[in-house]
Length: 522
Ligand code: SIN
Image (cartoon, rainbow, N blue to C red; front, side, top):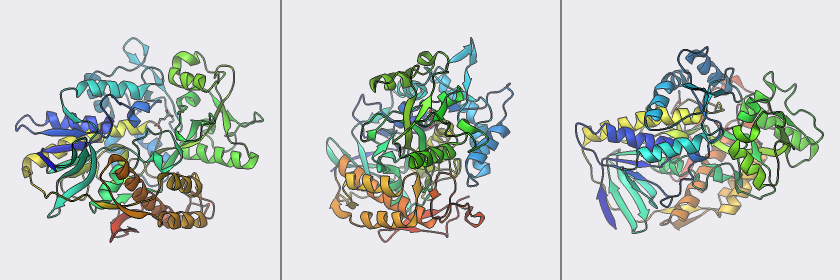
């Protein structure tokens, strides 16, 4: 088994991971720190969730009619009573500074007039405050800029983290599998920036690497995760007849520019459902589409964008996806349906990404800072990744500098529970989708209990084990919440229950995921 040493290990190369790595690297000015970044993907594969982000970055620009208070209020309203207001205020307030740093790293955003960024709207925003790049290719620009800015950093491709190594209640390193076989990177600080969990489902807007890795790594390290029942289904994933895997996103910004959702008869889906109609928060729109599809028996609804001016120039990514599916969005409504998109919950952290385990940090989609509550406001995710990624990287570097490099053991390959991925995705898509109920969640738990223990020593094996454990955690959290709130819709508990206005926290106890009410997430 190979062994190496580092001061800070960052796992993941999307926005939060690369910003964390840059921040750790920059804070190494007094004392040189070895910052190592791990990516499961092969060199040249840039398909992170960040890369696929379309709409943009929600940010309050100075000297505009917008305000931090208004952005905070919209975030809290979308979050269904479960956001941590202090966390939201802290992250939103640092948004403009974080975007300015990104611009210093080379990112360029679309301009309405020279020197003035163009602003769009998405669901739940009462103001136009979303900056974008390349029309609807914002994530690609963010990823390009960060890839360029981190070109001299030590980024290891085809390195999958198998487990976080701890000793004496502290992080000691990461057990990794690489093309050279299993190894250990001994390090006192680790930042989880592994992204989301969309591949729990048969169809998702997420890239193939979104397999719940960080949730599983944290749970196995004894760290709590929270709000996992709140999986956000994007209202408009392209319905192109393909069975599954990553499916194209149809950005909500198209509705921000006036497009509307209709059913096969041309009737509006959102009129009368919410005062903001087609720009209602995402959970409301996804549930309304799901209800209309159930009522009509149709496999999709339609986004009518024929009235959107200059569509192909403003939305080139969506135009290309539609053309690939034989659809001309300027002449015909786009067939869409809700698709698994974003985990509002994750590893429980503070607003600097600190978990309860000294030396372990989490940032980006994998983390639960209290920003998103029960339903994330559109385009708040790149914002959170930028702000908390930088804080987590700096905090990890400070921890490493104060602790010195520890040395862990050399572990054997772990044995972990694995359920066949196709069976897992079928069960999750059937029983833990937009609308859930107790019978379905029980059936899901029974299916997940069929997982068998196997040694894990490859990326694929680790991903299957991570999906299995993450699905178990989602099932436990969803069964525990006997109400409907945000992205969690229960057909058997359709009302919101004021007594359940608190986050669900789960842990791994003796190999089983359990709700832990002794930990109160803010
Ligand atoms: C979109 O462009 O609709 C997605 C943006 C987001 O998920 O925040």
